[in-house]
Image: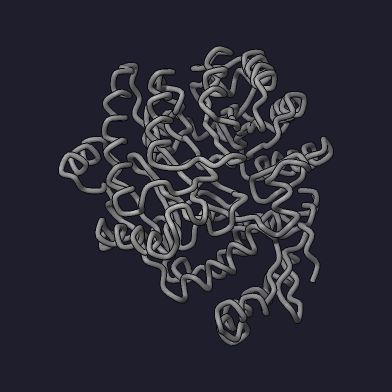
Length: 470
């Protein structure tokens, strides 16, 4: 079976019928089952059991963990944002939040064991740089008291260019962060104004230059296509600037306009949004432009320079998806801390409460703030293997699934293979005797291919809560 990720074809080769057929909502598959399938029947006791099982299965300094810390605060509102955030200019709220976060760490470690090795740390938000330098120092000291951040790990923080200076970047380097993720989204002034996020390109270029002087291992930049006032012509200018900036990684996301779910998006005028054909043209343009500039196409929404660990993991078949997107650590347990944070321990997913009031109240009672989650059953585990292989590698070996899960693939997935036969006629996949290969054309619709194996989605036709797959 071919194992190279196909290079997407031109948007010009896509038929109007195919575009209409797949202009539908669908999950991004940062997990399977997806977070909307979590249930409140899974709570604190189930999470504690998962933590204890991990502790009992190895020494406290065993297999490395990944840590995620959610900092929900932002100084100003970006209209496109679908993250769990709190808009405030009262920075003292960060100090209070850290007190409760420390309590959550203590309760977690009581069941997980102290001194667990951590090889990945990600601070997300909101905007983690809402915290002051002293607060960030306190946060990192707190984490180091409870976990062992191993040398050579990936320690990343999301950076709002509007809230940092060269001096702040120096502080982040001093604290041990070696990866930065800059929220760029778009360099066009008209687009920035439409989404209420003004940040001149010169400001971003200056900060990235300083970050390189400070010796950060890698720099990521986030872009979004499908924003209001964007056109293929304006987005081409953003792509030209981003390749001059030359970050090590680029995350290219499609804007999901769901104003019924996310109140800030109600400030975006729907008539200013580009149509599906224009969005697809932007995606096609970005794929060509970035790969021509020397980036490897890692998968659905990620690009990396060839020597970046993410690109290396992709070539070596070690790529995985978790709640932060693509990761270099397949099946690494993820301990998530903070309001609304989602984690994975063993064969379980868990999510914390979504409001500060509930978060503070439960921690004040000495309880972990888990409000819902899921213990994966055998079928979930089989389907997760299939979906992640398609999303991460673009191909699937029947034998590898059969050996890992003791099933006969063709019998177990007979109905799904019938659906894929139709997709093969459309040119999206190739069904081989040994497995499934996503084609060049199919990479435009890889989420749609993965959806075929989503048992929950097939039983639930209410998909409007997801973004469009193109």
